[in-house]
Image 1 (cartoon, rainbow, N blue to C red):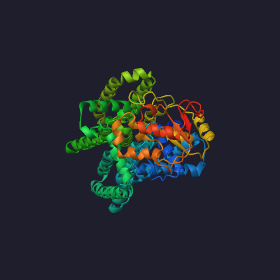
Image 2 (image 1 turned 180 degrees about the vertical axis):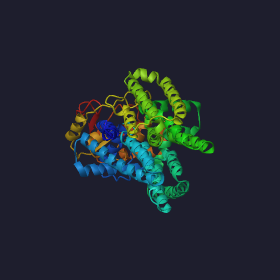
Image 3 (image 1 turned 135 degrees about the horizontal axis):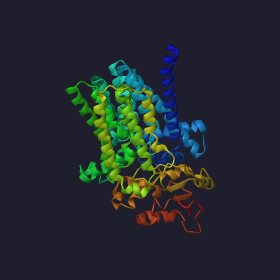
Image 4 (image 1 turned 90 degrees about the horizontal axis):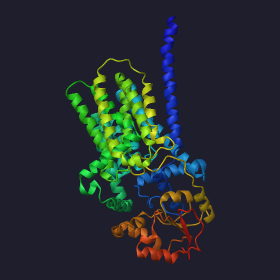
Length: 560
């Protein structure tokens, strides 16, 4: 065989791996694009769109999310209007997703350039590629939730803090982005601490300045919102009081720790990269000199893991999206391990394939079985993760043939597939385990909006997703009246300032509604306060003869 032929073979092999990696990434991204924007995001979009059309300022609209998140969603929706105007809902949601992808690519580039400056190209490429891909191919229930936006801002903060050569500029930019992690949702404060910890891994002095800068920006944000938007803090207090059983109110309880374990197991089934994170962390720690450095590495890994779950734990509801930072952090750690520890690439790639195959099989089981066995599956995944970590420690010091780095991209792409495959559930066995990743049709709802008249003002007693589909304007600053709805099941809510403010949508004469649009499954009028029932009966005729024909989920009543 000629020497030229022998030299060509490795080059062809590398090219084949790169083509395979690009194919897997493209497939994962295409599958993610095809998923629906989840109901919590369309709730926010519906509230901003319908109240905005009714003349309510974005600063005054309540969508159960802080003002920074509102501004982000409003900006994405405004960009969508500029690009495609009043398009169909599938087109509108697709454009919002693509706009977000553009932002993710930009943030990933900032991270790449920042990490490259302090740690070199291999580490930067591995971390930025994995993190960016995990943000793009996020589980549908995570994507664009505040708990997803927080680590998105955290990734930006890490890159912005490390990129400038001048420390003061890195501190300024990184501190501002870290403030956004807190401002997008106060409960994601632990994610801000995690962000600072990651910066410290690369440059401790710079991390200290970023922390100081972030503290100043957070103080300025607090003062500004207290002065100009005091109702934001009223809403925040009342929101916190809604979940009165959370650890924020009563501290650590064994039952909550059990729920945390179950929730993390659920997240791991949906995002198998989480199971590989301990092994990837072990591989990175093994690179350090024996002794104090490795002990410090273990401590950092444990603290990072704790901070990644603390936000979801503190909120006390244990929804899967409250742990959106976990698979993003896991992907970043996995990307670093694939890039920097060639000896474990074979093991990590095979383990990723095996755990992903297990997840795909489990997610196709009947919903009842998944819900009944969620605890056992969580335990099994925890044991698999620990076993893989121990095996990686053993293999990390051995000399084995290394796979090309691009195989790490293949493994990561495969591990991100389960939640975005058509027909797979939003969660394995916890809340929303019966909601599936399937196309939704809002044709009947959009048709109803057209029949009522696109500019006809209405009062919504619906979850905001219906607002998004109908599009009729409302002058109520609570376009999806959470406080009136929550009071139906918790009488104490009627004492909240937010409830009294929400009630003004019915009592103030300045509101001119032509119709009431009510979702009985969400707003049970029979359980509402007597005052609410009386006010609705005085303004709207909900007799069977007067009702406007509507989809089965809604009741539409004209004004009297």
